Amino acid sequence: MSDRPGRTAYAPVTEMVVRDLEAILGASGVTVDEDKRMAYSADETLPRFERDYPADAVCFPETTEQVSAVMRYANLNLIPVTPRGAGTGLSGGAVPAHGGIVLSLERMNRIIEIDAVNRTLTTEPGVITSEITRAARERGLFYAGDPCSGDISFIGGNVAENAGGNKVIKYGATGQHVLGLEAVLPDGRVVEFGGKRRKDVTGYDFIHLITGSEGTLAVVTRIILNLLPLPRRVTDLLVPVPDIGSAVRLVSLVMTEGGIVPSSVEFMDRQSILNVEKYAGMKVPFSEDAGAYLIIQLDGMDRSSLWRDAERIGDICAGNGALEVFVAEDRSSRDRIWRIRRLVAEEEWTGSMPLLSKEDIVVPCGAIPDFMNELPTIARRHRATYNAYGHIADGNIHLTLFPEDAAGPEDLHDRSDRLRRDLYSRVESLGGALSGEHGVGLKRAAYTPMFLNEAGIDLIRSVKRAFDPNNILNPGKIVPHA
Ligand SMILES: Cc1cc2nc3c(=O)[nH]c(=O)nc-3n(C[C@H](O)[C@H](O)[C@H](O)COP(=O)(O)OP(=O)(O)OC[C@H]3O[C@@H](n4cnc5c(N)ncnc54)[C@H](O)[C@@H]3O)c2cc1C
Image (cartoon, rainbow, N blue to C red; front, side, top):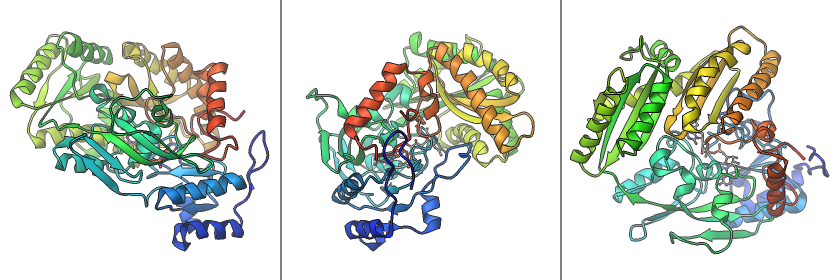
């Protein structure tokens, strides 16, 4: 039995509970197999948690009615339930912090409808995001919310995390594309908000409260997404620059002087590039001189206006300190540019080095140079090395910190905590936030009070209580226990 801090204890998942769940879902809809329970109790968070948080049972509902019945049962019996998408989360959101039931949405995997007239796509939550992008494209339409994990994550997980990615600067994060939701409340009641309409101020904006709530308020069972006209042309530019300050200045000039909003602006620091060169045995142009690299992507309907914009960006870059501008219009040169960005992330996942921390901080764009200039001092203070990359036009920096010296797990844990507090306090003072897109989850819940005052934390707890008075839905996430 696991404890519910500050309140009564959660009930255990007994054999009788498993039989009751099987009565709702059928025998193939529930498992207590140990390997499965372990596999469904972890996500992609790095560094790994110091201990396992095993689920007692994993459930696989196929319909909203089944989700509703499981939630009603769990609520009446005080059993914690953790919703789960594809388990690609980077903050432990899908990790069952108090055991109980993991509710996998993987069998709710149908795209229900594409409505070309209303430009909407209606889907169940367990569809892989890139399938949504592909289905829309086949109808000449565009789903713009695809995060970098689009090939492996589910749309329901994207909604729950309000996932970002590299197109946020032009198209916004996932929440911007959600027009309607069906969701199951912790007591099993089904609610519907929004629809195919593009305006609706009837009552509170529950769509955007549930979006990004990390599965703590309701289980999302159906989503209506906004689709856009499909951009026919794409061009990418790779721009090595002397330092991160030049990169930030260039991004700002492209948008203000150039009047151009790129569909992506990604950056990688020098160390990220050096890591890729070593990992992939390749040579990235200008890697001896460049302090940072920008990848700028443009999309649009016709080749000539895109080409004009690319030239304009090239002129701005050349006149403002860029070391070079490589323009890629054909598929294979574009793939070569994005391969570098993909390898930066891949190298970290396959790397055997112990990690101190993997962060997703966000600051106002203008504060990036200050932050990046202070990073070496912060890292030195904690005997750490690092590399940084991410979505520079959103101020969102993915920062990976490694211990300079060999260290055991205990030491790493304490050092990681000290380092993160130091880092976050600087981020906060620059007007930044704890996470730009990966979420707070279990990994960062202890640090939310560094960014929200007591009234803000109280409000989060009150909203949680209004949805989930028994605290059975994904407990232990977002804020520290009361
Ligand atoms: C290589 C890699 C690249 C990534 N790139 C990006 C990126 O560019 N941008 C970005 O934002 N993230 C990125 N991520 C993180 C991750 O892919 C996203 O957070 C994604 O949205 C998680 O989706 P999932 O289906 O895997 O959800 P899970 O990890 O299974 O769950 C995430 C959270 O959502 C909740 N949840 C899941 N489904 C539901 C539902 N139906 N109803 C209610 N709650 C639910 C869970 O309880 C949990 O709190 C990346 C991860 C990896 C491994």
